[in-house]
Length: 156
Image (cartoon, rainbow, N blue to C red; front, side, top):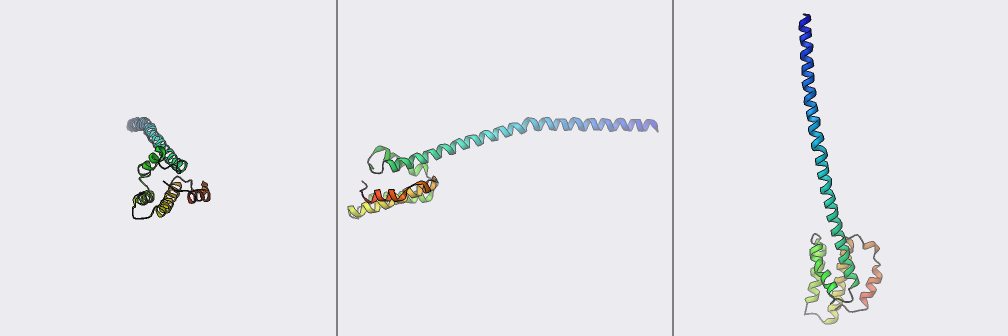
């Protein structure tokens, strides 16, 4: 009987050692792949953050150009910014609608020139407001001053 107990304890120790080796293997496996996957995920997040920052800066640059060159609508900087609106703000349906409305007002030959100016001013201000909402600058713009400026001059 004593030998049976001795053999049993050896078997139990052998099984425990086997489970210990298996657990160590799992630990080694998880510590190898866990941090690696975390590093890969962190790198993807960093790239996404950089891309988001680039897009945000592009949107802000376009808005700034549209404001800065609004009294020189035939300037290349303004026209370039206006053309980029459709590309950079492609995910915003309201901005797409506003830019289409502005282009429609620019190309409408059935209205008198003075009425066309008023229509273009209104469409342009509407586009600027929508872009300001998108880039979260709407509350920082002095819209009264912007509106006063457009009410006193002709666009194009």
